[in-house]
Image (cartoon, rainbow, N blue to C red; front, side):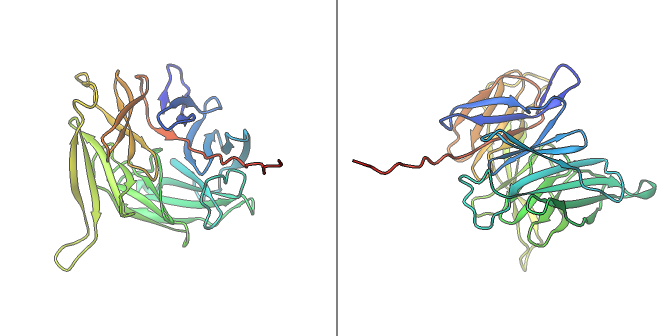
Length: 299
């Protein structure tokens, strides 16, 4: 997300035009707003005490009041997704949708953080009952890109963990991450969970290894990819950071200070500069598909 010279902080959204190689970084359409998510033809924006579900194709907005919580939440995040079972998501921007909102707050007397979650349905126009879980360490939900894998949403915490929300069971739980600063979750080729981060000019990938008879469940470092000479040299006292990904692909966004924003395909190792240098918090790629209706030949 682009941090401007003034007090306004807003999201950078990558819009592809015509070809995947053509990207344009734009800011959220509302002043003093924060783009939280882009998925299934929609953009989710936080503005003040309300959420805006924006359809860029139809240029329509739906405004939602934030859900009511037992207590004030210190930090929050949200995700938007199509609510149609079995949808191919090729053209679902006008259909029903859900918004999953999560918040974290410190417990009474400065105790452990507590995480809350609620789901908004565009079909009912209401938020669901709140579900919660305790965070066993000092951490809160960050406004980093969420990740959808199957029927599960993942939200990054500030310290060594993630919130896992089961869409089917409407349950919220805590899972531990590799504990590396700036790491973001992504989907592995087998549909499992991975983490990626930049450490000392290299890309690191960790994958989740399930428990066996001989070992406990743990994060395992899979491989390392050097970024030089693929990316320009990084000035001293600065560092590169993974600031986004194209969900369901091998493509990530890397902020290289002063040099610009780059996409990197982790499989082909293809690099492309897609934005000028700046200070970014994260980038949310917007993707939509248009399938023309062919008129019958009347000859």
